[in-house]
Image 1 (tube, rainbow over the protein chains, first blue to last red):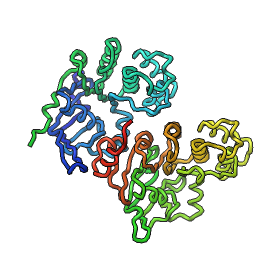
Image 2 (cartoon, rainbow over the protein chains, first blue to last red):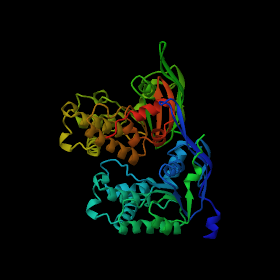
Image 3 (tube, each protein chain N blue to C red):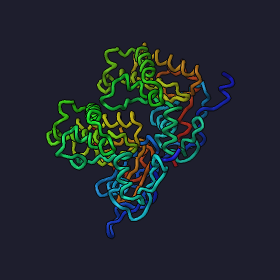
Image 4 (cartoon, each protein chain N blue to C red):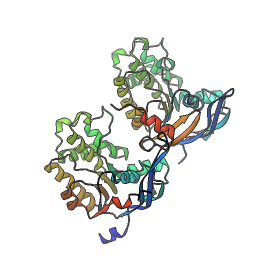
Length: 234
Length: 256
């Protein structure tokens, strides 16, 4: 473990970001400056701060969903801030998982296949991928009669659990978790926390946003106040 | 690895008017590229130039052929280009009628593509046509009907079957869901997404519908007045657009 912690899986150095609204007089809104963060394999770091401080923005930049204006973002061996689209796609396929708060899927794909898809994309045999998906859906208490159905019609909590199952289907070396326990009851919340602990034990580097203080205390090794990266108003 | 398609500095003008100007990109095997922009932005002109339907004024379209590696399709002989169009390429038109033979049965429409690449055994051709009709959710009992008897959504699915039956490596699509009802669009998108993933297809999709590219495209190119104003990962361009025009496009979509 000590050896693992000497390495860095996710690293941000002096990252800054602003949004320029071209259709609103070209207003430029700085949202982040000097963001610096290192996460080692096996470590879980919680981002905290009041809403609007840029927790999700930071996470989206690590995922390559938002562009960074300046600074360096490295995940594994990929320089996310400078990588070509296909390098980011490869990173997301193999290395970097992301459990967002919303499930965005094509309406007709079954829940089982939604969960198995990340593994199938990686070339895992379909049978093995579906077995893994069944295991995760069972652990997350999604009733079996729902598996052949599309999750688009499920309740918010069910969708979130499907999203989590999908995010944990492949053993990603790095994971981003945006409020993974937000709308879950105690039982399912506990399942998610144990999935996170297992991911840490196998060496995953995790960055998460957890509003639930107990959950944060249980799985996170450190907390980072994102407010420190909020640009000072000029 | 070699890009499947390497497009360099394509410019096409219509007299003094710019169709598309200095467009370049590379497409890798298995990647789906979306091209969005409003009518007149040059996206269909560009697609036409890539697929060999229009002759650009300047530029190169290098396609990684199976036998000879990258070749500029613009300088190929017409016969070579036609062969490509029958084998490694497919073109899905917005209007299914432009991509189908309306006087031939559904099964015939699919079988014809197979015959064009040398299939001769009637039983095999019919079996493969039936398999493909099934994949695009057209039941076997409609196999001998002509496309004119089909709904718009079915015609479009038939066009897709006709195009994909020969196992192409690159598919060009021009507004594949245009003119269809929203529910029919969703079904078609779903089907396309599944087929693209299963077959490991590369595709270039022109559309003005951002929801279509969000679901189908890995990468996105935004065109305005014949120029590419922005390109990148699809979700990045849609969620964090950098150019004023893209910001306008994204913010103009009605949320439901």
